[in-house]
Length: 103
Image (cartoon, rainbow, N blue to C red; front, side, top):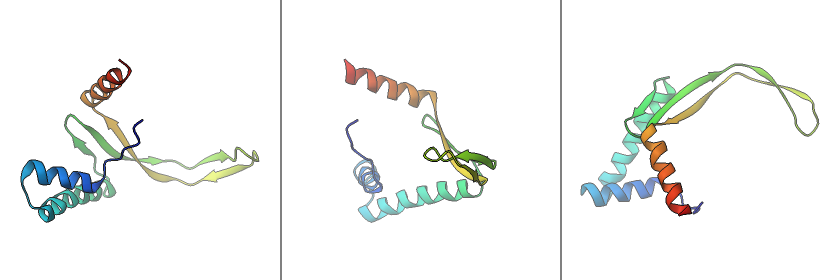
């Protein structure tokens, strides 16, 4: 792994270069898209981005866990978790990238 991380600033810079909006407009656009996605997920909607993947929120039931250090049983409360399922195209792109790195 290269250790690089794609940040909001990187996305803003890409929009600035590719679309031609000002830096402030690009930042506002990126923030708006991320906020819209977050709001949809919080309200229980699924966010599907074609050729990329699907973000959704899943309800996890309460269960009993175990502290691996002590072996003590610990109750785990019910909670909502964010899941991401990549599209087949994204899976293929990542697999192709892995093959190029090895070869």
